[in-house]
Length: 69
Image (cartoon, rainbow, N blue to C red; front, side, top):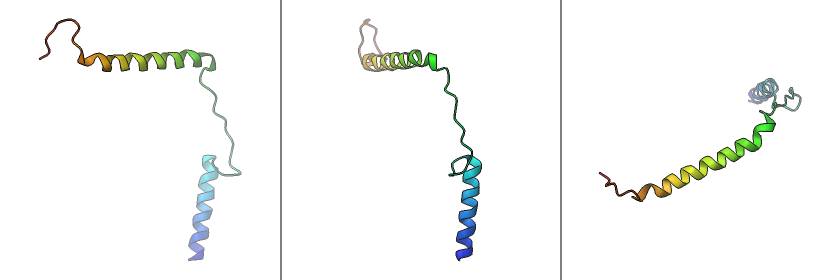
């Protein structure tokens, strides 16, 4: 039984090192996607959330006098 445990630990460490999550695995830093565009992307996301929230909140009102089916 102990032999199976050691084999499991061996493969776990080997896979972890290959994926870079082990202690001695390769350390790769991800490059940031266009850091100078980040404020514009955050602003666009906030505007999109506000527009969607406004559309959902105003969906029940009939301001133009049209009748809903």
